[in-house]
Image (cartoon, rainbow, N blue to C red; front, side, top):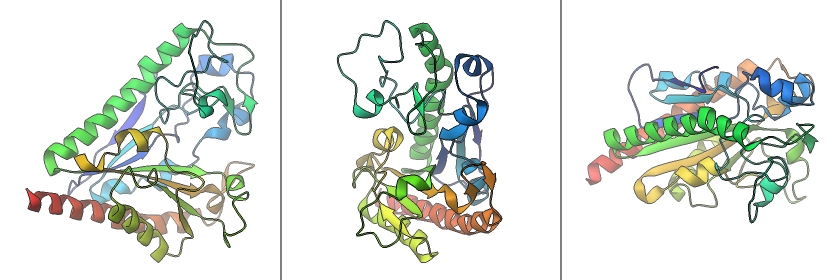
Length: 287
């Protein structure tokens, strides 16, 4: 069994900043692959391809980097542990399911991509609980530990939850949008962080020439909603990057512009980490 996450400490100048990549894991459990009816390429559709590589410089700017090592098609840590799908799990008695779980996107996903079923038959509850105990809960325990440490040391925690989005999900946006966004920021419509912080993040991406939009089509998942409590000085924002900017979404290969994009994002991540450092100074000055 592989370790469920990789947590890289900042190289120097520790800040109360955490970058989180919950969906870039690509170490596939052998039993999972045997349980699935899909080809390896099909089952990889849900990965946030190369996001961990785009983020690998953040530790140079004083931030922690947390990454899931397992794929989201196996266990999705951006869902609540209670988001269990009775259409997938045997002998599961639930009174209701939220729309995402009912659609097959629970904590143990039933589908990948546009409704492709992962399994030829249902899973037993013992297997589901094994995945949660070995992968889901250790990941969240580590994330909470990093947040608690930041609060203890700086009085504030800044969490950037980083994802990639398929370009196809941007093509159906309303016609009032002249250009589809390249970056979508999710702050749960202003509830997961202070408005000034969300705007500061928007301004950083905008100043570097990206087309940016807030909360549409992604306003933030479980991690953003669960950990973002601005009155307790935990600021959380989800950042979605259009993966067509840097990869061929059919062949899963990098485009020639990947390293130019990575360099541009390195500058942005440095600026975002600096915002987190300034926030901690404001909190400490107020105490």
